[in-house]
Image 1 (tube, one colour):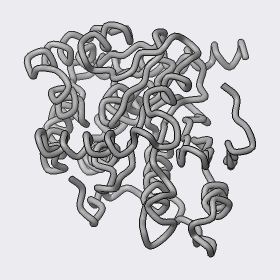
Image 2 (cartoon, helix red, strand yellow):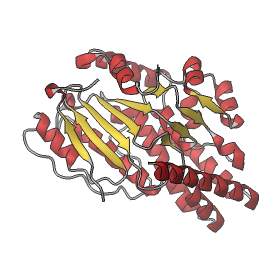
Image 3 (cartoon, rainbow, N blue to C red):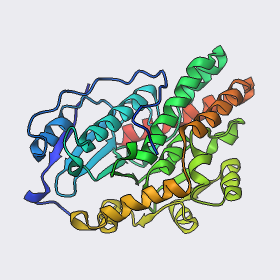
Image 4 (cartoon, rainbow, N blue to C red):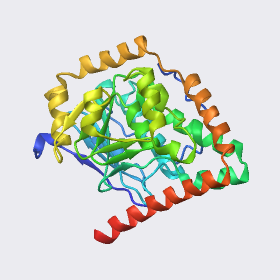
Length: 332
């Protein structure tokens, strides 16, 4: 198991409404968090907590100057939400909560969580289609429901952040499709480079994106437009989504990180305003876990009603994801 975490000391120089209870999903939460070191306000102790994480699917970095936890997908397999990716995303979210809790490191230890990807040209390709086909063919409603609710928990936490003053940021420098696009939509701030592409292809195999797409997209664009985007299966450019108001910050290719820093301002200058805006959004357009899981249950019903021709199309798309990854590994 790889554990590629590190501490970025920028001071030395740098280039260029949730409740306290976590919703129960039945998904193995993964490894327990390690005990926290003493002297919680010292950045070195925050770095030690970050470095202690044992993760096979992510690369973590903590930046002290802007109090930012950088979390990059570093996939060990297909770049989608396989169970291991889901579980370790939850582990990162628990780390975020601990770094932000007054009882651990103090509220000042973390302002931003930024999620990007080390996979060239890919942010996340969505749900685990191979797993879906196996569970649907076996009629395993309970397992499909656990998976769907775990995805809802993940995106709900991205949006509401345990009601903490932390801003979640999706840094998208490649494709975000299906469940990957759903996840992007759940972040408080979306920064995308022009080369990034987005889409919800579930309609191609007679399904719909049921783990947050409608909930989050209908709060960024008109509900009628959200439904049209969900049912079209169309692939959208970052520029198109920026013009529609779905994406917050559009950056030239290769400049997403700089665009993020430019947007937030230095030394936490805009953090308070952005955190207040997130709270205002939740007041005006509240997101509830109940809403999300009720839609996810509809997705489970629809998935279990797919016929064999639909499942074959799903299998072909999963195979295309594998071929895409294999081509990148070969060319690397």
